Length: 260
Ligand code: MG
Image (cartoon, helix red, strand yellow):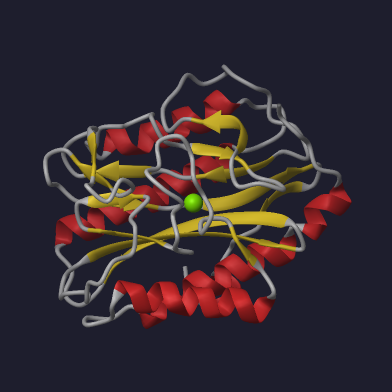
């Protein structure tokens, strides 16, 4: 069921968006060569506790999960791209890091992800990250009243195709509200002009992610982490946005913190 939020509810979602933005900005700053993934998770955990927020991940146990996630942050490194379960690993020079974080504040959820390289970047990794960021910008531009979900999907896919990447539609964007995953699904590929009409009050997580040279994923033995089938690297950019009568609000925007 697709739920539309009142303007007052959208306002009430702002603190969650700001909190998620602050956590990702902090973790991005913390993540250096030598930083352990468990330390990043711990830092996020502390910020949740201090803010009185609630993790969306720690008890998350969908049908495909072997057990509850048990951490508050997804850390996907290099050929891992989604749902990366933090483990005892110190970041190395040139690692491509994707952090995905969702939390609830005052009962409202926000969900956001960022990819970046620690240490010395490879050009192809920066290009892949740049494509996911431009695909997210295109999705945001397409998220307007009077248009449809398919317009967002088509906008994302056009950016990926122009840059020569394949697209996997098994995992994509989704409605966000009192829980992390709601209707509608927002695939990263689709037909313009099709699908659910975009209306004021719709709150969506938009999340382009691409792999360098495949569209196939394999699940890690940890039961969570999704890796590229061919070992190529992945990147992921995500924001939670609210469509309103007065235009789009990027609830998880980090620019007020001086980071992208
Ligand atoms: Mg997310």
